[in-house]
Structure formats: structure tokens, C-alpha cells
Length: 271
Ligand code: KIV
Image (tube, rainbow, N blue to C red; front, side):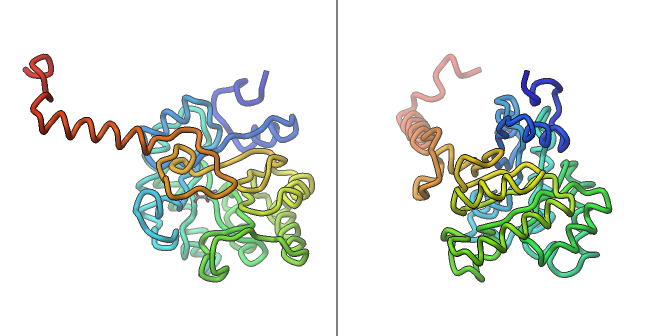
């Protein structure tokens, strides 16, 4: 029997057991109650309220503008829906970089007000003191290395990270530091598959990949992207598991026609 189905609620300890057992972990982003309930029922083990909400929910070009209070608002709905999945909330840009004290204060605020299980933050050695303080305070932390979208202005785009040996070695070093500090998991975004495998083997915590090949302990995708809601966005690593943009447009188009021709609502649909 898989680790996941033995007990109904996912925990950070069970995620470690899944890594040890070689059982892959399925994580998706989630931003609202209705879809979170479906993802939870489908067996998704980690629901990430990603700061990608800034893009796919709010329509911003970057993840940078979203605030702690906006993340808490979205996370509350996901928490209410999750019967089994572990719910992780992204700490938005600016909420953990200024000082360790502010980072811990914001992490505790997110946990207390949203009811989520854990937080995720982007970066390695630079933010290690903040991560250590959070973990000491009892906040479960997920790390995020490789392409870290909050640093888009530093990187100058969303290209593949850690192609060169020096950056690859720094990433491996950072992953070991996060693991030793007690992160319960690490996301690796858009890095070569061989490097992702090296990191996965080098750390004791589960490694979740996005654009990092299939030798990680699990995978994550942005929900709107994998559902095909975001038609213009099709990087090499993304698989569309549905084409919902077409379905939504067809349904809305049929509704518009039915309203305009007066066939909706019918007699049966009226009181
Ligand atoms: O915000 C987000 O959606 C993420 C995933 C891409 C891992 O951080």
C-alpha cells in the first residue's frame, strides 16, 4: 500500500517516507476553494498556493506585486477545501528578505491567519538565516532553487538556470544547506535534469521538480498551465493535461448565443 493512502492527511513526515519508499509526489498550484477540492479529491498530495497567483489570478506580468494579505486570502479557500493534501503558501516578494525578524513574523502570520501547513520561499544561502529562524519557530519551510521568479529582474528573464558548472555547484551547495537547516522539501525550477538528479540524491528531503526532468522525488506544475487555460504559454517542460481554454470559450459562446436568441432560460428552467 502506498504511503499516501495509508492515512488520510498528508504530513511532512509522510513526504519523507514517500521519498525513502521511491513513491513519487504529485503537487499542483491551487488558488481557490472549488478547484482545490477537486485536486484534493483527485489525490494531489501537496497544494501550493503559489505566488504565481500574481500572474494567473491577478493578471500581473510578474509575481512581485502580490502581498502577504492577498496570499492569505487565497490560501484560506484552499485550506477549507483540503481534506488530504498538505497546503503550502508562498511567501511573497519582500516578506522575508528585509530581516530575519520580519521573515519569521510574516511566516507566523501566514500560518495563523490562513491555516496552511507550511510556507515556501525562494533562495539559498542568502536567506538561510531567515529559514533557520522560521524552522526554530516551528514553521515548516519548503525551499525553492533554480529559476526563482521573484528574482526575474536580476536574472533578466525566465531562461534555464544552472547550465554552467559554477552555478550548478552553487545550487547543489544551497540545496545541501537548505536540507541541513531542516527544510522539509525543496522545489527545483527549470534546471538541467542531470543536476536535478544530483541534488535529489544528495539531500534527505523530497525534491519536487518543475522543468527539472523526471528523476526528482515529485513534480509540480502551475494549475492554469497544465489545464490549458493559458494558451499562449507552452514552454518545453509543460504538458497540457486538458484544453480548458477551448471548453470555457465554447461554453461561454453557447451561453451568449442562447441568451441573445432567447432560448435560455427555457420553460423548464423558469419558475
Ligand atoms: O508560484 C508558483 O507557482 C511556484 C511553482 C512554479 C513552483 O512557485
